[in-house]
Every structure is written in C-alpha cells, then in structure tokens.
Length: 293
Image 1 (cartoon, one colour):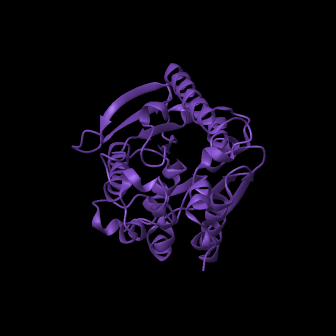
Image 2: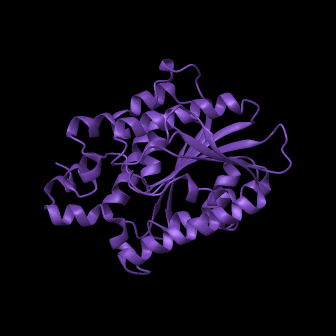
Image 3: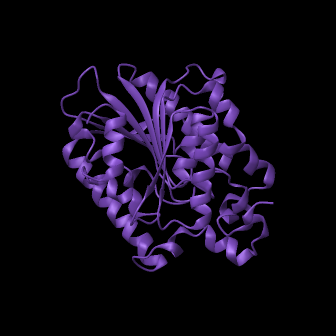
C-alpha cells in the first residue's frame, strides 16, 4: 500500500496543496506572487521577441497558441513548447511566455499552448488538446532543428502524457529531442479524493487512463525523446517530491536518458518563475539540452 493511501483526507489535501509548503509567504500570497511574476516575465518576452498570438491549432475556442520567435532565425532554430500549470483549472497561455525571455535571445523559438481548463474542459479533452497542439506545431514549423517540451506542475503531467502518446493514431510522429518536467504529478489517482478534483470530476478510471505512470511502456516504444529532465523543488510537498522521484526512477529503469534535479531553496512556484533568469541552473540546463549554451 502506498503512503498516500493511508493518509486521512486532511493530510492528503495538504500534500496536494502546493501553496501550503512555501517557506517564503502564505498560501494565497505565493499564488498571487506567482501570477504577478509570470505575467511580468511574459511582458518581457513580448518586448524582445517577434510574436504571433492566438494562432489556432484546432477548431475549439481554447485551441490556440502564442509563438515567440527570435528576430533573426536560422535553419538551426530549436523550438520549445511550454505547457502551463495551474492544476488543470487556472492560468493560460497569456501568462506563459515568460520562459521565452532568456531563450529567444539564444535563437530558440517558444510556443505557449492553451487548453480547455476545468470546469469547461475535462482531463480527457485536455490531454487530447495538448497532443493535437504538438502535431499542429510540427506541421507549421517543420524547418526547426529540434522539438523540445517543457511543463510545470499540471503542465508537466500533460507533457508526460504527450511523451506517452500512441502516435500511430495521428498523421505525424513528432521527433521530440528533449523534455523538461518541473514539479509535476504523474499519478493523478491520489487527487480524486481532494478538492482539486471538484471541477475535474474524475473517477478512478479516468484518472488511471490519464496517469503517465500507467503508460511507461508506451513511452518506451513511441517516444523519440533523447533526454528528459525531471525537476522538483526542495520545498515541494513530500507527495510531490515522491511523484517526481518515482517517475524518474521508472524512466531510468526503462533505460532512458533521464536526470533528476532536486532544486535547492525553491518551492513549487519559484522553481518555475526563475526560468526568466539566464543564469538560473535549470535555464542553463534547458539551453544546454537544446545545444544553445
């Protein structure tokens, strides 16, 4: 029996409430500060990049993406797709361009993807949308030198689901060169019993069919990923830390090229916010992964 299975409801709720674990400020304050930070970073990215906003990747109202391009692009331009967090019910692409701020000057194109957050969208739809967005992006930008994915929190979960896609059901098979998973959740069954699930309305069957830990063999078969980084914050909750460690160990057992980054002096939020800094350890690792260091 897993540790979370013997927790009472209050403890499980706390474990899956990332804002309760920050050492910097209160729960509400850290969330507000996070929104302020990523919005400011996105404004910076808009000021230094060529932007294409609200580009459709499907017919749905929320099936749009924002593109941040270097002013001078070369044939060797890698492209990073960023999937935002927010527990599948908060945030959007409008605050998700911040990661482009240190990357565009290095010659990297960045795409921030929207999806139908709950309660409007359900988990099956969100997973389907991010997969569809990847297909659309590589069809539109076939000249890129390499495709990379990055996701934070719920976005890391969605990236992991993309990595485990059966691409035979799609018109193309993306050649994903690398993925960055930051403070993610890879088994979503535990959150069924928490308030996180109230707008999601998942039962166990839906949670299982959307949990990356259930599709590890599919990842081994289908993914052309050459490198994966699984990162977690020092001040993430024990359950979030366990989730990252378990996913890392599972990938490693498959023989995949995967590294684990336990990032000191960060919490669930500033581990991602710091990506706007070019000298941040994870930013440097991401730039190195894309061959732009």
